[in-house]
Length: 395
Image (cartoon, rainbow, N blue to C red; front, side, top):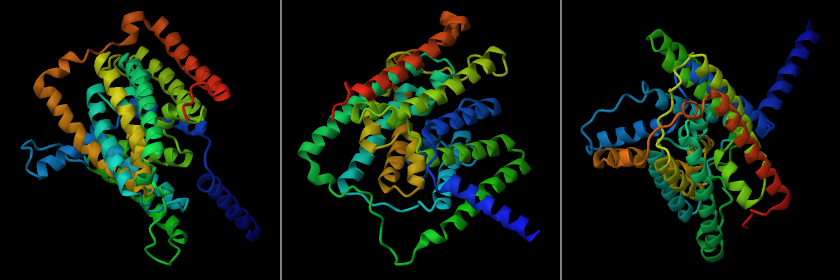
């Protein structure tokens, strides 16, 4: 019996080490995110992030007296709760892996973080969603606006990287010492007790689900739980949509392109089954302004995510592990998105950005699925060709 318990203990330790002491492969992160995204779709609606930021920003404007409209409570707003889940899931993962460190950055990096958040907020408002709702989910639910934003993200990432190259040549002194050094607040090694706090965060998220269920808000509680899973997966695999658009131009690396493509394939094929069989309405999640809004929004968002060093989703999980620059980005994005959205609505300009198009309605399901797969394959093949030749690398 003693030997048996000893073996159990060793297996638990090995499992813990494999889960939290080793980086997960990017493709595994993409695969798991695609599966969880499908769960969210079946549970309630297609996964999104930007509207959660919008809810937080609206509360800032309301509490500051700049708006009279009372927003929905953040703990009841579905996408706000999902974003909380991503943040706390990543926080738990960072603590369990002893990787939570509050990282300082030079002042100019905070300026770039704020500017990046402003551009991402404005771009997301134009495109009807961020890199998740406007690109990933849009492509996965066969909204043609997703492909327009994808093209905009490519061009925006290229422009943003061009600026960063210019900055390195002319303003390198402003971004000196950007190695993410941790704050020296104490001589005590806090990493030893981080896993205990990580376990408490996980228990808190699971307990919150049951509290939501007790108050007849099971769907909202489920979104907190699914968000927690996504936050943990993204942190452990370092999954970042910004890298999929940045790395081909910066280093030529195609690893994250493959990961995002795997994730999209899982989500897209699953979404086709869900929609084609009417488990969810075919038009669900199709609202993106094709093509002007999605393309221009993607371009602006792409520049912003290069300046910030992260997209809307990675801003959440990297802020949760202690990245202070992206904490600034989180705030500026949350303030900009609702302001831009309201301006577009009030001016009537939103109607000029384009209209939603559901690909199967345009070319039928029989052609939409092969086109979807073809675009993913071409994207991966182009990235792998560039990885070998570095023809598109500008550094």
